Image 1 (cartoon, rainbow, N blue to C red):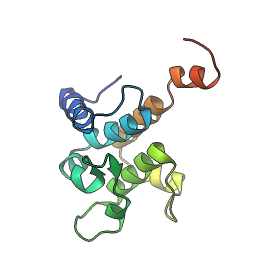
Image 2: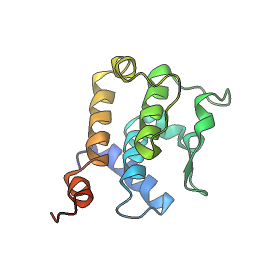
Image 3: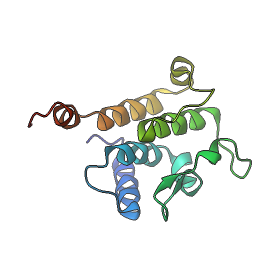
Length: 129
């Protein structure tokens, strides 16, 4: 797995350990990869994910309790989509990608790769790696 820096890796480990996810839970791992790679999202992680229930908090996208920039909301939406296929009326991939800077685009592409690794493809096809 490729991390943006050592801080990203440490935050990712923190999130995966606090959620007690299964080692093969690529859906949550891809979401946590995004959250841990963006400082703003990591600071607001408890508004995005419920670590007691191990579930996403979709209401964070419309809540006035926390302020997310438009690019942060786009990262959250795509992270939720990688997690469980979440979509809403603002899920326009081209527009969402255009709102991201190079660092967040890289973060997102790595999260997508993590979610759809070769092992997953082989598993779905009944092949061993």
